[in-house]
Image (cartoon, rainbow, N blue to C red; front, side, top):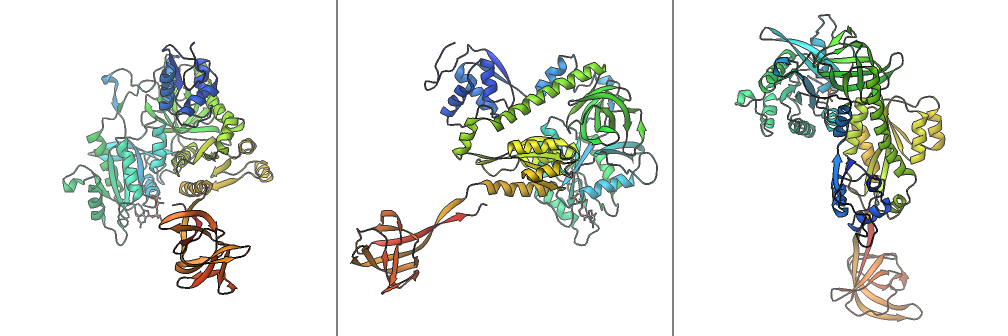
Amino acid sequence: MQAPTVGGIQVPRGQGQTIRLSRGASLADFADKINANPASLVQVVFHWGEMVTATQSVNDETLQLLGEELNYKVEVVSPEEEDRELLESFDIEFGENEGGEDALLPRPPVVTIMGHVDHGKTKLLDAIRHTNVVSGEAGGITQHIGAYQVQTEVDGEQRKITFIDTPGHEAFTAMRARGADTTDLAVLVVAADDGVKPQTTEALNHAQAAGVPIVVAVNKVDKEGADPAKVRAQLTEYGLVAEEFGGETQFVDVSAIKGMGIDGLLESIVLTADAELDLRANPDQDGEGVAIEAQLDKGRGPVATVLVQRGTLHIGDSIVCGDAYGRVRAMLDENGENLKEAPPSRPVQVLGLSTVPGAGDNFLVVSDDRIARQIAERREARERTAQFAQRRRRVSLEDWESVLKAGEREELLLIIKGDVSGSVEALEDSLLKIDVGDEVALRVISRGVGAITQDDINLAIASDAVVLGFNVRPAGRAGELAQREGVDIRYYSVIYQAIDEIEAALKGMLKPEYEEVQLGTAEIREIFKVPKIGNIAGSIVRSGTINRNSKARLIRDGIVVSDNLTVDSLRRFKDDATEVREGFECGIGIGYTDLKIDDVIETFEMREKPRA
Ligand code: GDP
């Protein structure tokens, strides 16, 4: 090993060896790999002008730069890669159709409904659910399991479509961020009486970024003032040109409330999928896919809704889903019917898992329970290490404290609990996107499904975190404990409300910014010597007002002669005054002796600037 490198700091240099680090690794992780003192790496990075603590996550670029500086080749491994390697170590390939072209059979499209708030996404999902019943029974689908499948006739053929039952692009994007591309096609809902709105374009951007084709549902056409043609015209600006205008996008007029136009919408979805996508999968391999929702059920234990993406899932299969594992004990569809098998694009509720997986976790069938358990355990261990790293940072680190003391950064720590993992993840994802500048940050230190427990409260106490409950409440004595210890618990049932409040809280954590506001100016016409007090400026107020006790500066020929003065005395003739207005004469004492005729006294105050 050679030393020293940067600014006299002793750091062991490498010989170009490769070191592998997980995405989001800390300087302590780096130091661990090269047998160095973490503090020395903190110093190196500090020399670059970056303030990070040893256990704080740093970005890929910093890891790479540090590697170059110390002569190591750094390989940053993403969580997906890490997981792939884990599966490979068990000789498992995930995410591939086996058996080549011949093994592939058509599968139904998986659809997410997106659009601006209140444009009718939920109502549209309801309308589709009610007008169309795969099982042929009256009454429609009654259960919410996170996704459902419907059937429609197109060109004399019965075709299936799977709908993700959580509307909005937040959940969609949260899944994608975790590497789970569940959606094949997006339905963009636009209310005909309201037109294109901010979240319409946001949803559009998210769908386009994912390369997902779009069918536009122009909703609320039953309403007075509905203008479906205007919606078509507005969307051409975003590259969605209706077929009737010579474009390629299908626009369908619907009324979710009246159940009008739903069949047409389903047909357009099938036709668009046929034209733009090649949706095929091999149904004859072991089942694989992704969890879209999961919760802990009192009677049935962990219940996860999974979307089968390749292969077929059977009762009795050994599966691993995130860090949960188990044997499929039962499978239920959206009608509460028991299924024996689930082919590609089928969403099913799975019973029999060891714990509640997260939304976006992949699932796969493995040859036996033992392997399932080993994979799950390795994943859980990895997760635990990651969380431990975060926790360590919180409680002890002196350097972290010094950063806080230096006023560089403030953090709001959150613990999120929710009723289903889909909403927990969507909430976390949206919260992490709140941006109020670099001075304050937000960090989710723990998240989970189920009631708020004493464990959660203890963690909140230990780390000064705020607990967010999304459709959940404290269990047992957790509420009491929180109250006694002064832990802040916030309850929400609407994501937007949570985002608004947290954003406001973050802004509140920002230090106030002040700006100078000029109050008045006065010109010196005469100078009086007053024993014991000093020189008094006989002045005339030229603008605004001069107030006693306000801050002042003295200006001569346009140059500030003295700053940081105060109006100590203010007199009109022989009387003390608190304020003298423009055009009036007065005597001003500013505790400064070197006054000259024609000097200008300027008064001002510092006012807190409201945050935008
Ligand atoms: P989301 O926020 O996009 O999920 O919107 P919702 O489905 O909750 O609908 C918002 C509001 O619009 C509700 O009051 C619905 O009753 C109403 N709404 C939804 N679809 C229609 C429609 O086709 N016609 C009319 N007149 N109102 C609708």
